[in-house]
Each structure stands twice: as C-alpha cells, then as structure tokens.
Image (cartoon, rainbow, N blue to C red):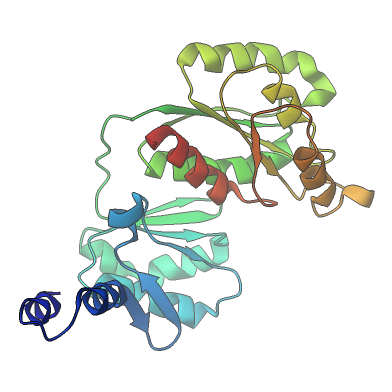
Length: 256
C-alpha cells in the first residue's frame, strides 16, 4: 500500500488507478484455488467465511493454512463443515493451536470458527432465534454462531411451531421482554411460523426456510414460497437453510 501511495503522490498513477490497486491488494490468491478477502472484517464488520461443501479436502486445508500464514489477524469461519472433515482438519492444523489459535466447532451447526482469542466484548444487542421444530435446530444454530461472532447475544427458543402454537406465545413475550431487536425464525414443512410471529411483533423478522419436509415440501421449496407469499408485513426471507445469511443480515440491522 505504501508503494501505491508513493506512486500517487509522485503523480505516477491517478486516483482511480490507486483505488483499484489498493482494492486488489486486499485479495489473497491461494494457488489459483481461492481468492480470500483479507480486509472483509475491516470493511463490513464481519470476518471472511469459507463455504466447505464442494471443496476438495486438500484445497480446504490449503486455504486455511495460507490464510493464517499471510500474517492475517482476523478470525476465519468455515460453514457447512461435517464433523468428519473438522476432525481431520483440527489434526492436520494442530500447529495453529500451538500458536494460540482456538478451534471453536459447533457440531449441530456444522460451523467452525478459528479465532485468535476467546475475549468477547459486551454484546451490542440481543437477537432472538426461533425454530418451528427440532429438525430446524441445525440451521438456527448456524445463525446463532454468526450472531455471537458478530458481537450480539443470541436468545434461542426451539420447537415452538404451529403444530402446538400455545408454546409460541410465552416465548415471544419473553424475547420481547429481553429487548431483542430482531427475530430469526427457522421453519420447514409449510413454513408458517414466521408469518405468525410477524403478526405479533413490531420488530423485523428474518424468515429462514429449512429443507425439512416430505412429499411436495421436500427440499424446503414449499416453506420458501410460503414465506415469500406471507401477508404479514415486516418479513425478510433468506435462502433455504441459510442460517449464515440470516445471522449476517440480523447483524446489519442492529448495527445500522
């Protein structure tokens, strides 16, 4: 960056060229496998995340190694990471632990955070996370990890769907009493829960369709369409099983 700024001062490049060079300098390219945004946390307030599925194990291992060999001081998140892969990674990357890095793996969410320390500042806000059924918990837990990594406190309540709707009302009352600023609501099957919740609260609701279901609802498409078609105002819908996206969006709301 110093070289770029010196060229700008000496009129060797113009302002636009300097801006493009600085932007490109923020991208770490690892053996033509991945381009990591090393300054994402500084720019967006949230660290870089790597989506595990579809990557060869050796490529995933290389990405993590190179990330921490590049003098990076930001945490790294690996999403949708099976326990089998995590178990192998933490053995192959044991040397990082000797350098003080912490491997924090949530088995339900299948998400790994590799962080430099466990010091967490006071939460900036509270975010509520609900599920319709127990089968939706893995997606909700992914959102929970993201919310907490982003500096918020997550208040959770699971298995309170419309099949036993009497379970819902005391949990909503509790979360509102705790002062949550956003509600993340995960549901599969027909995806009705976010609409019910949005009709009862005056805060934003982020609806997360899950791939839980059978028959015409298999794969989560029915839940997705139902949430998009909701007549209750104040709902934003993310993609199927996208707990990560819901968590990041909730953080954007409370930080705005």
